[in-house]
Length: 476
Image 1 (spheres, rainbow, N blue to C red):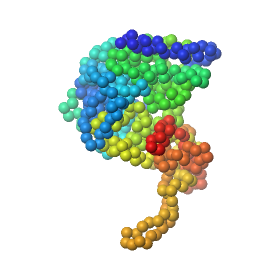
Image 2: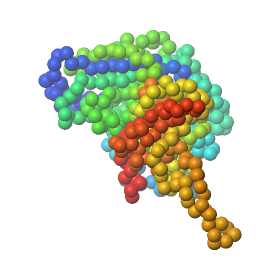
Image 3: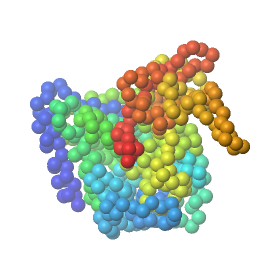
């Protein structure tokens, strides 16, 4: 298995190194990093761990159905070719995570984390989470008797999630406990390579993304993850307890050969500076280190329309598809069977009726937003009148054939601004505005009004990574 991974890595950078050799010696790669605040964890282990989590989260963590019912969507067999993981067993050893769909097609096993979420019984998002197989570094997948994971959560929700776990545990053979931020740290890292000539593919695709999503058995996955750790953190591999490759921006990496890869790294609290652990090997350039603050991390994330934890959205206030879980690889499954909140999610997906979606927006004069009520999402108004918002439409009387006209019907807001940092934010936009929102001549047509003032904050919708795919689905 190690030989397979070495062969994969041997193919990495061949084409890119040739391109980099033509660059100036002063061209350097860029490492940005930040300690993320207000993070806590639930640690869970035991022979029933994967089965237990599979019944609670939206992601598919097992290759078979837990339960079939009327809301289970019949799977596309070409997409769920489970024969490739036919010996799959998550009850013994420390295999990592089963993932339903990879870039190469079909399911795969990975030791990198998975982004997903928990719903309440009404299908509203309680919180998102990242599930990390831990520890990342093992000599063998059977060094540990049972599967073990860390679930990263916002600190203010971890006690509530612990209580939910207790409620659902029943006779499941699992153990879990809270692990506070005083024991573990969560780090944001982005690694950007020097600029490449046009037409050269982003190195992260062949070096990391595609190989990481091609492992069909646990030992191959383990060896690949260990090689990646050795490439980036040589000599400090054992200090990395969990690692997540941010699949929420994968599409951007495929589109832009300069886009950095974003990682989430878990370490113990003894690590005071993650850049001290960073020790890259075999790269044809040097790295510049830059520590950034949490506000910059949020601003960069919002430019893609990505929300992350309860610091960005309110608990149990939105449907997961409204913040685009269906466009995040592996975040939600529509053919896994029953889990908490599954019925409404499956129905929304199968009918295609979703009236709001989160998109990135650029904000003019965001300082004015700070004066608004913090407990309410600011409403985004529009000067674009849709047919459904017409102020003069007939109303039919149930007592006869006569009709009357409703006058001065108030136009509904185009959306709400759910979070922002500096000049970028994420807005929940009505989907019937989306086709108009990204036209070049709509600048100034979306805005937030300041109460008791004539001032307006201009909101400029930005096209999200998933828009073309969404539009194709709407035109079917």
